[in-house]
Image (tube, rainbow, N blue to C red; front, side):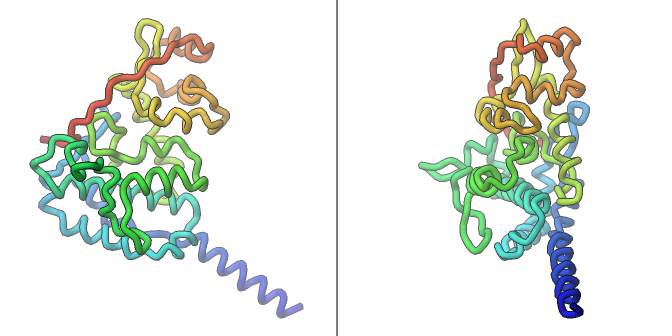
Length: 265
């Protein structure tokens, strides 16, 4: 009996240690707090790439910590810790990609190889492999089946004006739920990207590209209207528009995406 109790204690202790294990994102946290600037009342942000270029050694140091993480240790993280790691990794390597050509870049779409987009360039050393931004987002985050959370689309940042805000702090496992909720509401309250006009929802193209993610039943939402209805309290719409949204009476159209660099300059 004593051996069984001891074994159970050891298992419980190891389990608690694994669940409590975290990754240190403090370098990234310092960088974004110093170089990301809120605009439009905080619904969006710009990045001071010029200042980041001068501080690139710290970014390089952070990227090296990401690359050094063994896949086995990542798999031992809690799901929120894993997702925070992947979101930060995506955002940090996107910034690195911009800085590789800055200041001679007006849009992230100008980068990449002759026959490939910047999102397909395999320049990221991760989990003992060379991967792309697309791989992080579409395979590790969206395609893994581990997370199934459409709010990630308001957390990963593509370095463009049309993107949801690059958050002014690092994502962490312990704060991830709150951070994703805040990011979602920031984006939805931006009437330049999500609004009602002439009886139609005019919303970001993000909802067109990833419509399936928003209609997959997360929190009971099986349509774009139902997803927006979850955040009706955050929408800067009239009462009549909110009522029409809940009644499913609004047509949907998608706004053109602004791919200009989200630079402070």
